[in-house]
Figure (cartoon, helix red, strand yellow):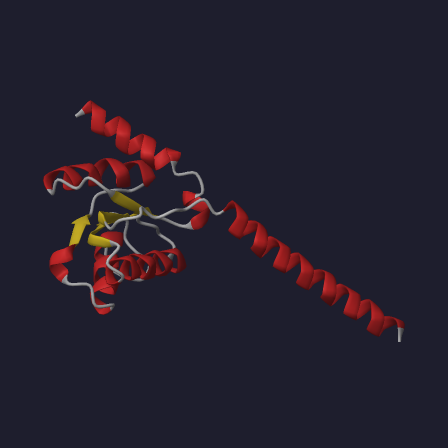
Length: 158
C-alpha cells in the first residue's frame, strides 16, 4: 500500500513538473512573426538531423502559410550519412514538402552560425529582401540578438 501511494506521488510530481516546464517554455518563448508576410526565411544549417528536420518543417510551413515568399537555406557542412551539404539536404526536404524549386535559394559554404548569416547576406541583397525571418532551433534562437548582430554588422561593413 505504501509503495502504491509513493508511486502515485512520484507520478503526480513528475507530471506537475513536466506541465510546469512546458508552461514556462511558452511564457519565455519570445518568438514573434512579423504581422505581414516576410520576403524570405533564412534557415540556418545544423549538423544534427533532428534539428534539421524541425527547421525544414518550420520553413515549409512558413512558405505554405504564405508567411514568406522565398526560403534561403544555408549550410556547407555535409549531413551525416549523405553526400549533401546542409543547404542541399534542406532543399531536397523542402521540395518533398511541396515548396517550388524557384523559391528555394541555396548558400552552400557556411560552417557556423556567423557564416550562415554573413554568407546569406549577399543573397538577401541580390534579391532586395527587406524582411527576413530567422529559422533556427528554439534554444539556438532564444536570443536572436547574435544572428541579428551578425547580419547588421556584416551589412554595415559592405
